[in-house]
Image (cartoon, helix red, strand yellow):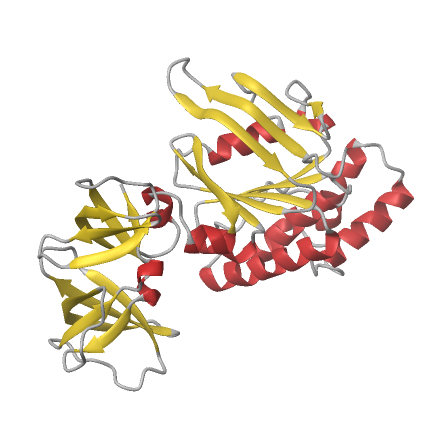
Length: 361
């Protein structure tokens, strides 16, 4: 494999189960060696089907999948040398932890002495050393998930595939495991492909994220670009929180455009989709990018009048719910360190920085 060639390449891959509706539509995707790539999207978006085709459990209706430049579309799953971790752990209840982890090595006919060394190393990787004699029923969900991960890593796979592996865990444990998985990825340097519908999970762990909708990738990018510069309305609304304004484009420039809201307010924002004058649009801004001013301040350009309905405490920030004229409710996030927290019923100016207001058709 050349330095520039991806480890995995999907070329024109399609999948249909009924011969009519495409679950995956013309997928072209490169996965680089050593990266942590998350496939993110709502239920039915095609992300899990994509993972199952890569694993070999599903066959593409059209197109080709390559590994190291060689086609693997017709290679059975057990010959692909991929580790797999599922949400339901899929551990054998009658086997001990050590026996569960050793199972892939037994299938590959690894000698017993070598098996013991590899199992011990894999369990230590996931901080389960010394628990090899226990049975799955004697362990918590988090411990069982670590065992499933050790089993996926024990035979030194070329690729580790994960299908919502943390979905059954409680919030605190799930967040802890996210950090551990990312650190394990960093230490091992393996290629991880991770399916999730949880945007925060994808942003926390991934080098890149592919956002799926309706069987196609809407955007694939590094996490900062995905969050700060979504390429369309779907990605903007699915990844992170958004405050949305409906309006009509009045003038356009090189990269920006002016938008008139139904109340008559004019706003300037980034013309992401190159919309034309007269187009009905949505202008989106992240709630933490909105700057709040009291009414006694002189309003900046790109400001809109609002009335504060409620202040909600979120632990690490405050969330303001505001009523706007002829618009849906606006959400604003402000830090806890804000000196003067406005009170419900108070009128405010919401400043929307033009560089953070993104206009979509």
